[in-house]
Length: 477
Ligand SMILES: Nc1ncnc2c1ncn2[C@@H]1O[C@H](COP(=O)(O)OP(=O)(O)OP(=O)(O)O)[C@@H](O)[C@H]1O
Ligand SMILES: [Mg+2]
Image (cartoon, rainbow, N blue to C red; front, top):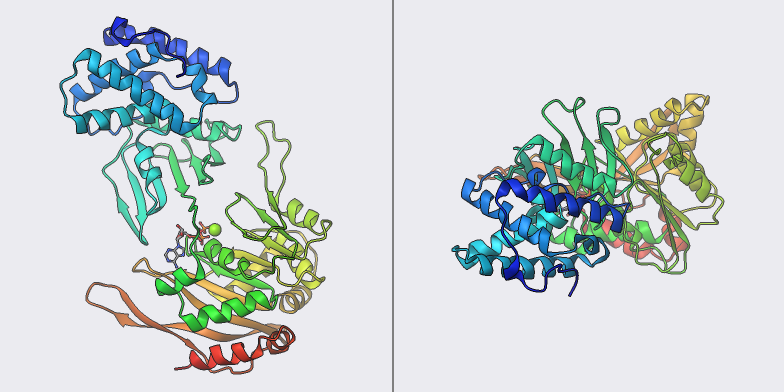
């Protein structure tokens, strides 16, 4: 048992709400002493809340919180496993309620205890959302407007923070974990939750209606290609084509809009890398889950508050080249690192991959050209294009359609230059045929009838040519 200050709960006075502030101060100090790199728990008066509970509920919660804080040595909370700390809080809060003879139903009691745990240890009203596996994104647009994405659909929840100050408090708690702070002078921050979820915070004055918090929830069990087939994102033949592309070490760019499933797809493709290969991954926030034993994971780092110590994606990709990788995987290509990735693809690191934001395979090529041009490389356009077409073998296009469904819409080969124009060839596409009565899109995947793709020789070298032909043929139907 940790940190109960008193041997027995029933000797504890329940102070009126106004006097509850004293022990709360204690707690803040104790927590800072125990773990200086963790934010101190916010005072009870600043706790985030759903804002939909009755005033009686709030009063009771405040009283119990004060008693609870008085009864435990919160300095030890930071050192405990989260589950253990929660159990401890649950036990003490239960004791407090029993001692107080609180007359609420056991369901309400459980809800209140959960709420208390969330306030003391977690992210307040976001906790129930963070606990749900079916949610892909949580979008908080100010204190009383929280949207979630479930099954491809964005919907508004009835959960809310009590006010923007409380929301900012939770934001601070999140960004503090990566050694940052958000305030007027530095209102933008990327961070990560302990479970790996990706977080972006943008605070006033930049976000006009209060702090805005966006969370891409980390999916412990990433979707597999088999699941993508099951969801209709691709057909079994298309999946086989992707598998072959991964196995025969094609250089691949995965293109798509925000949240279209690029990282998921990249993760699936890395599943076909041989276990003997040395893979180096570069990401802004480590999301990929490679199964191979020989993987080095690199992550970018933003500059510190003083503006020092930044490690950009370009720094990482350039460094990769000195690490003797067999393949380089770049989570998201956004800037001048495009040049280094292409160079890596061109210089013996076949099977390298990266994702980028674009709506079509052709646009993906224009984007890469723009990234390189804007990155300050004074190369003629033709040289850049030549470099692109000789490095990239395949572009896989992912899309989130207007009904919320995610589909792989193109598997496209990059063939070469005709004059100054890059030439591509679709191998596999998704045709939209219409819409059903529920507004869901009806479509079908099909091969374009190219029986002998440009990466044929490569497929033959790896002994995959028969499967390749069979997959393309089967997909023609
Ligand atoms: N085909 C699919 N069917 C259903 N859900 C999917 C599919 N592909 C991805 N998802 C889910 O959609 C969410 C977003 O996927 P992912 O992170 O791969 O997108 P992204 O394009 O990389 O997003 P971002 O642009 O923000 O980096 C995740 O929760 C993921 O599990
Ligand atoms: Mg991504």
